[in-house]
Length: 112
Length: 117
Image (cartoon, rainbow over all chains, first blue to last red; front, side, top):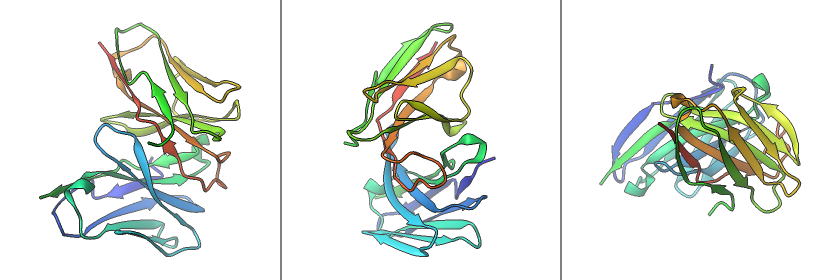
């Protein structure tokens, strides 16, 4: 089973709107990371939030972390067509010997 | 540019063949991770090396093997290829050693797209 799972699987919005993606995980973590992947390209690190942080900002990105609910959300404000990509959450874990486990991702489409 | 270089970018081969994918990590990074990304399986962790030693093994098939050399570059060897091995193979590097205490970000290469016909 996945350590991290994003929700929704796909999201389509208009340019200028906000996009919110959620990630749930199962075991305790000391940090959670969000990555973006443009179609067929490598993943790019967006932001890392530590377990003792509840919220973090980076430009138009806002990430929250609720360790009691084992969940995180990524908010992209004032979205642009260039934000069209897949977004993944990743958690470090020792589960089954894995070091970083990625969820299946949310495919975001921002329509002009 | 992440600083991680993967070659080849594209590879087309036949079933039963053997291929080698190469990864040069970011300068100074000691950790190399390999991931497989296919349409129906998402991003699957294969194996992690730190400073030449295997640190963790994920869902890596016995037909697959990897190693990290003294200059820190890594190779992923895929043998007896099957149609289902067609996927994007990513290498990522990190300065950290991995594990639950690792808070470092991963830097991904652009991947090697393998097509098995």
